[in-house]
Image (cartoon, rainbow, N blue to C red; front, side, top):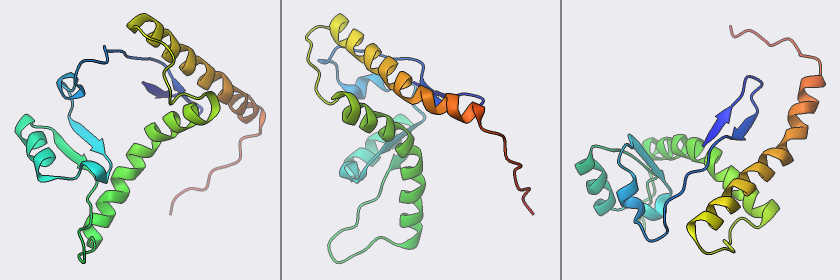
Length: 144
């Protein structure tokens, strides 16, 4: 779970865990919206979300010889802005610390790995927060 502080600095403040043999579909019990990339765009997935009362946040996919319309492109852009915040965190962990591969077996060890990964991510980003706090605050332009 990420949290944005008063200075705009994002930090990971919680790590959840479930055994790997449980289906992710069964874990999403209290979801209000599911965001996914266009690989999950299908009638089957849309019907499953509608059946469970979950809002569809799956990006649309163009079919052969039929490009996406302007409404669908705008919708995909809005979904991308939400997904980017989460995907950036996982991408940074993968790039900086090799977070793509889990090197441990067992729930306790893998949970400890993810907690340490989150701590390392926060520590790597911490100097930026410190530098920003030392910079003078520039006056913000007021919207017209």
